[in-house]
Image 1 (tube, one colour):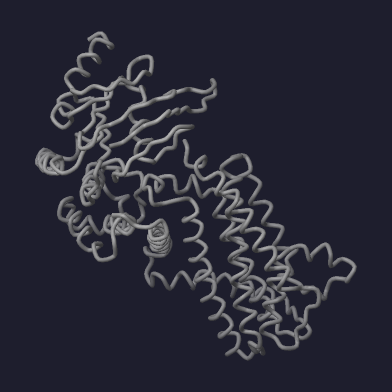
Image 2 (image 1 turned 45 degrees about the vertical axis):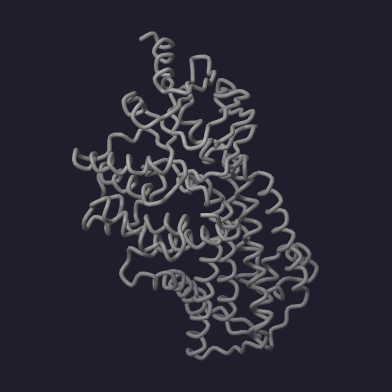
Amino acid sequence: MARSGFEVQKAAIKALFLREIKTRFGKFRLGYLWAALEPMAHMLILLAIFGFIMHRTMPDISFPVFLINGIVPFFVFSNITNRSIGAIEANQGLFNYRPVKPIDTIIARAILEAMIYAVVYVLLMVIVGLAGEEFEVTKMVTLVLVWVLLVILSCGIGLIFIVVGKTFPETEKFLPILIKPLYFISCIMFSLHNIPKDYWPYLLWNPIVHVVELCREAVVPGYISEGVSLNYLAFCALVALFVGLALYRNREEAMLTS
Amino acid sequence: MIRIENLTKSYRTPAGRHYVFKDLNVELPSEKSVALIGRNGAGKSTLLRVIGGIDRPDSGKISTDKTISWPVGLAGGFQGSLTGRENVKFVARLYATQSELRDKVAFVEEFAELGKYFDMPIKTYSSGMKSRLGFGLSMAFKFDYYLVDEVTAVGDARFKQKCADLFKARHKEASFLMVSHSLGSLKEFCDVALFIGRDNKVQYFDSVDEAIEVYKVDEGI
């Protein structure tokens, strides 16, 4: 039974991942298909409301493409971080098994969410593509890189939340409230161009804005968003990951102490 | 061998810090099963969990080169909406290699005798069925030490007999760390004892009988 720490962690993450996916989707007919169908239904309803009922349009970019590239990345972020907040209590029973550490629950969940939404993203883009919306994936590498950084950013923030939420249980009440407003200031329903340049500094601190606008740039050749930078996103993601890991390293023992 | 050095463990309560152990030093010899004896709330289960690495001490160290199980028969780690088989698979993925997975699941399926319930969600199980699954799951894996916390009453008479037989067989190659209020089963399975007295002093005894005597005197029975 002598395995290296890395092997143990790999086994734990894999086991948690499979358990999570079964818990969430195993009981339905069509099973795992729901993993993709559920968020897709969500997206399609939003598209219907904003696109076809409100007849919103954008210059330089088809509106459904615009919306998909805003909402999908945001959901990845909010799903990973939101579920980290109460993760210790929610998984308390699992920590009776020594190979399972709190960080494994975050990693497993991040991988699951990223995979689900990557599939959803591709499917939705194909659907709107077939429906005649115009886009062209010109910067594949940037797109993949942005997604990777998004997941790293979310994991970092998730780690910070798991530590803060456990150390100060009161914060579990308002941490979710902090995430909600990001929906309105992360350029999901509007483009950075819609905002006067003077106010950009108030928005551009937010790495999600960079994620969203960079994704749009990557799939629509005519869409150019000045002011966003991959470097800034990478910087934020790595800082969040570093701070998260440092806090976690420091508090892991304490979090498992009852 | 399990060595406990300067172990301090406390809980925060509204009435201030409650110390369960202060600067505990004990060495448990190799290949001996240990009975933990003491009144309710003395800290037997806490000590068991700390030794098993499930709970952490405030300070101090537990050092051992042996493998230690999770509490035998534990049902707290089960996910109610998953089937028995899926829950067993989850634990097997944690503790066994890919190639052993099938054997482990087969062992639990055969041992627990849940029939078609093995493929139904755990939340439909009765508590007896849950214990069967939990017990079978613990016994599917080989550990040097098994943590046993009050697990004597599992299922019906026939199943109880089956458990006892397996327990005895496993006892030949592994050791137990055992908490039980049935002094008989402590005598049967354990070689040495830790007695936790009223003043939270922990004493080590080479024989279980001796510890039980001291326990009876301490409790005045």
